[in-house]
Length: 296
Image 1 (cartoon, rainbow, N blue to C red):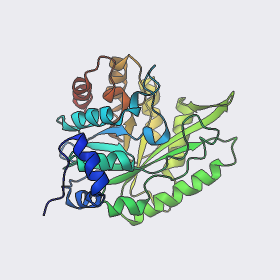
Image 2 (image 1 turned 30 degrees about the vertical axis):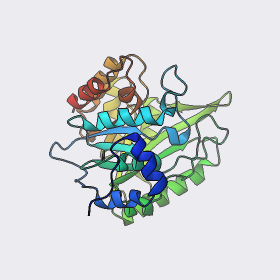
Image 3 (image 1 turned 30 degrees about the horizontal axis):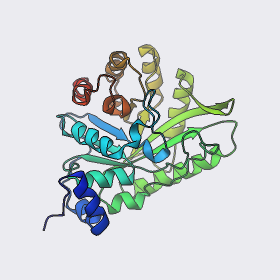
Image 4 (image 1 turned 60 degrees about the horizontal axis):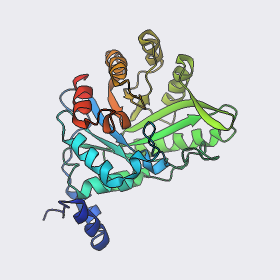
C-alpha cells in the first residue's frame, strides 16, 4: 500500500493535522537512489537556513519566511533535470516528503541548527536538528553539520568534540556526513567568517581529521575568489568535497565562473547551492538551476 501524498499545500496541512503518521509512511515508501549517480557529480539544493533563523535573501529580511512560497520554489528546483537532491531541516524535508517531491532524490538532513543567526550564542551550534539515528530511521541518505571554530572562544572545543562524535555515529550507520567548516571571530559583537585561503585551508585540515574514521566524511567548502588559491586550498585533503554556494548577491554570473573553475579540481564532486538559485534576482528559478546544473 502506497503512502498517502498531498496534492496541494492545503492537503499538506490537513495531512499533518489529521495523519501525522503519514510522515513515517512516506519516508518508508520513498524510492531511493545511490548517492553518486552515473555522472559522478552532485547537484544539491540547500534549504536549511530557516531552522537557524536565517531568513534573509539580499535586502529582504524575511524572504525565506513564507514556507508556502519556499516549498513552491523547492519543488520547481527539484523537478529540473540534473538536480540530485535537497539539504534541509526536518520540517522542510517532511513537507517535501508528503508532497511527493523526494522520490529518487538524495535527502540530506541538517543536524546542528542551535546557533541561531545573530544570537549571542551563535557559536554554540548545538545539535538541535536531526540526530544520526533519525536520519537512519527515516531512510535519508546523508547528514550535514556546520563546524564553526573561533580560536578565541573556549566553547569551540566542545563544538569540535560534539562534531567528532557525530562523525563517528554517522560512520557507524554507514551514512555520509557533509562537514561545513569555517574559522570565525567576533568583531564589534558580530560573528565574521574568515574566507581567506589560509583560513579555509586550516578549516579543511581540521574537519578532515574529525572522528575515528573519515571513510564517510565529505567536505562542504566555500569558493575563494582566486582560482589559483582555490586549487591550493583543495590540496589540504583527499576527501570528496562539494562547493558551498552561499549568498552571491546580484552577480550570479561571476559566481558561476568561480564554481566552474573550482569544479575542475580533482576532489570537487559537485555543488550545494540554496538562496542564490531559489531566489535569483531575475526571479527565474528554473533558469538559475539549469545554468548551475550545466556547470557540472
